[in-house]
Length: 270
Image (cartoon, rainbow, N blue to C red):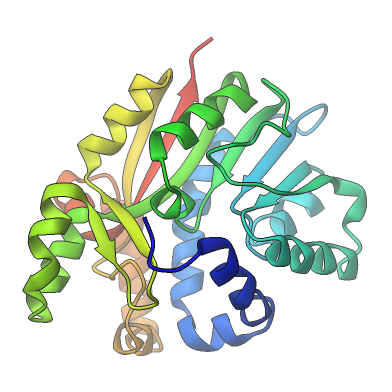
């Protein structure tokens, strides 16, 4: 699906993700994004005792550093072995190793190394579902490894917002492909899949999930924000306004359509 080998690409990117480069590049957008996701993660957190959370597509460990200090046991997995190693180093530096139950270099479309019904919550944030080679397989795997009654929280790129951005940037060559198939060639050379909200709902429902929420995360921002958009958030008043919009309108259907990122919360049927 991609013009580049995804594992090799993310292995090459791992050092910069492990450094402060991401914070320098995305600034307060990361605060906005993480807060938007956390509003949906927190209500579905399982009981701390005897529960395990999977961070699938963990990168260098975004959520484990919030969950482990709360007492949760977490398993970290990513397509890139280098990302996993950097996540391990971060966990060790923060002295959180006792809360990590395992590290795995895994494709979310094939997580056979993980047992059936072994997680109370699966987090697949940062867009791994858009980047994988078969979203249906990945969602099926999420279902297999989640315990009955457990949840998945996942975000993807939004097809309609991508189409709007292409028109605004006078890049009509990809417009038909994005709208008709969801296929999108990114600036970094990776090809990913841009979902529309109903497509995402239907895929989860077809794989045994009850969809609880569909929301737009970081409304008005592109899936990967531009440098100009990032700079705008340096204005405290605008940052607070965007935070307020995210709180109040995240699930409004029109706001969902305008958001670069779609977030879905789904529950595995008993």
